[in-house]
Length: 420
Ligand SMILES: [Zn+2]
Figure (cartoon, rainbow, N blue to C red):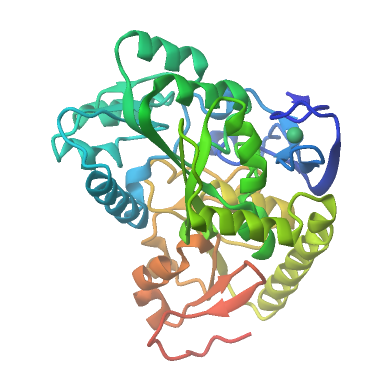
């Protein structure tokens, strides 16, 4: 645990604080039921901006073994929306890159093989890389060869020396997670064929700022990227930004294509020009973010207080990291919210870090019928509201906390008695 004094990408000491979310437990450190009520280890959660390369990053470093070790509970295959998104991306890539049995598709942070299995099913050789033992074992069980290790320059060079060269390397929601970002990016340069491509997906800083999605900030997310900040990072390792697509997933993400060959698509150049015009390379772009974040907290607490005052029962949906950030920043605990539900059976029975809400199966919603449901996983709000139609039809109302707290109901369900 240590506080940075220099930018993790360019090494500049020119860092400006932009947001302080207070001391928080690690957002994925679910609490075992027999540890309920015991103090948890807290770490400062704040974010700074590098005035030299424009990279936004958390100021505290937690060792990756602590963040992504054996008990890392996330299994990608528990999210139907993510599975559908992954499959369509795989099919599109197979077509666009004309991939076949002579190619190799590698994935960094391959989790339980949720993405690579689409390539394997099409007869394309695949290689997964993931340090989390549970998900890696699940991947191998469905026939996805998986190296159980952290990806970096050393591993990329070792795989290359073993004759593995990738036509495509995929890295979804991991570029933002790796503290040693230069060693990480160097690994891609080592494993990639001369004419190969690497595709990265990561939350887009501009969407985070514009949508006030501060709950996507937690210690695992070391970096919050703009294209402006990524260009010098990749260039340092001989990689060029070639193309970009904006995605709705995770509250607004980018899918970025890089390769060893220069050449920017028109849409990439256009998006970089927009960032320039917005001033994302300057500290003042980030100045009123902290004030807006405080506004979300105030509004959410006022809403919850008012509903509790009317005797309403409130639960939450989504025991994910972003939920922990939101609850702990707002100071919401088991005093205000009864429980949180999640489909992931690995999480059920445990408690949310910090807030210590019990995590129950989604069926608890129909058994307990809380009047209101705070959708912590608001990035999947449409899917969740559709899934929980029976809860809404029984009179339940959803609270979407971001970009500002508001009530919502699935389409075609008439407003019930519940209204605040
Ligand atoms: Zn920098």
